Image (cartoon, rainbow, N blue to C red; front, side, top):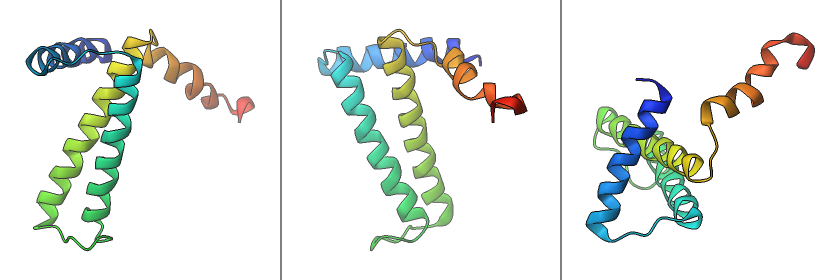
Length: 105
């Protein structure tokens, strides 16, 4: 799936969530939700790597929980970028891919 199509699909899911839970989206909401998801992703990573008091039930379950939080974090990045009018693909190309030219390193 192309990133643009993925963003549109994520927006459909988010719109359904907003409708079901009466959420009013704005830049602050997306940014705060992204921060929340980043915290949850960090927590799942620490559990998976045995750096918390809570031990994972299994490596597979810990990995699956981390994958879910990575998906949440990535999806909220897409939603926030779309909300503020940033094309993520173009931003990555401009910021990261310029370093593929060794003269920019």
